[in-house]
Image (cartoon, rainbow over all chains, first blue to last red; front, top):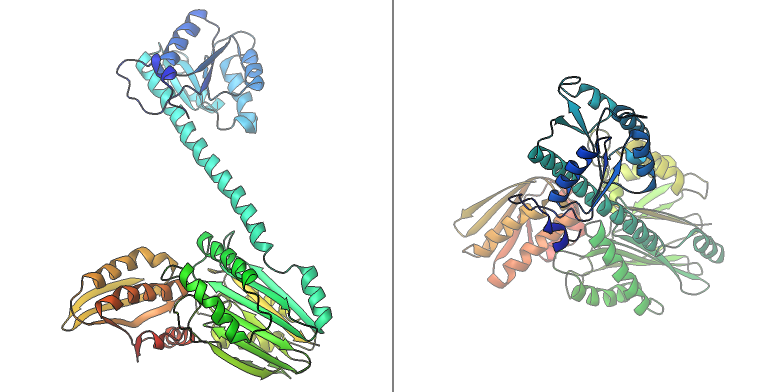
Length: 399
Length: 101
């Protein structure tokens, strides 16, 4: 809205100045020329920038269809189509569902304005029209329109921005084609699920094709969720592009990532992180972790939780990471997940916890190479949705 | 999350209860301000009533630590229940705080 001086020129003396109505357009539908002129003057005093006229309901509907109006002042008794009929027509059009329609009622025929309200009027003005009341009601309804429109514009803009940002965030995560290609090359079955709790989230995962035998898997979870956490995932992605993992041991690489994150992130923000290298030739998983939920190793029907404790990245200049190497023979699966899994609540409000996770894996990890989908399906039957945090789960099985 | 801040002989005692999550940032700011103003060298967080802490909650302890360090105040995380203790342990918080049973 522009609060231009032009719209204020005709303001009624003594009227409280709130928002400027110069951009608003009002349609006056009245068969009496005298009434049209009087009402028009009141609108001028309110500061309305545009006023148009119609002399009956049918003309009024034509005008409404032809251009945008913010409010309609409607008389009842008119030839061709009366005000009640026009009002009913207006309300059948979804585009005009919220259009303020103020009807002039006569105290003789409809003292309480019941017929008007039944026809869909927003408000009534009792005849004879009192200038102060008329202006106050018009102002009130336009203000309501103004705030409502501002809010819904803002909401719509935010929604579309968030949708764009969500697609950008999804593009950081390996897509199905990349996952399948990496799986084929390394003799692995790779499954991933990435599900931010809001439009945006603080989770991130990716893979690195280190050489023909070794595949790197990185999963990180930034504290908090929503926009600020999501921005941190973008920063993290940039950081990885600048400092790629090739040629480094997992712990050495995470230590290299920690330093810039410490400088970048304010106190209280950090990332839990897991980075592992699956080496097909050596049959091993070498990993380092910084405060990540314990990854699960599943082999020959047995589950083991790996130690992934450590100071989260970005907390201290001297990161305390856990680094280890475990056997990763054929038939083994590695399940890496965000804390949303173990911190999910069951229907009784209890945390799923590591015990619950182990139970679910026990029930769902069979001989089939596709293990994540049945696991998550069982997870969904146990926990309460929606989850409070971003969910990431990656399952890598060696065929 | 509910909290109570009391002055103790050697510093401050902060009792936390309930669930400590992202939505508690504003509340926790008051706790941090108490640490800023406090006298003494010890700030004990009594966690025995705390049922759950998420990553944002861990971040709040780190903010408290950041305020306490320049004042030479030691922060003690005392009496955490099993589930909270596990989260503190995964985050290796015993290397940053005095964690006591």
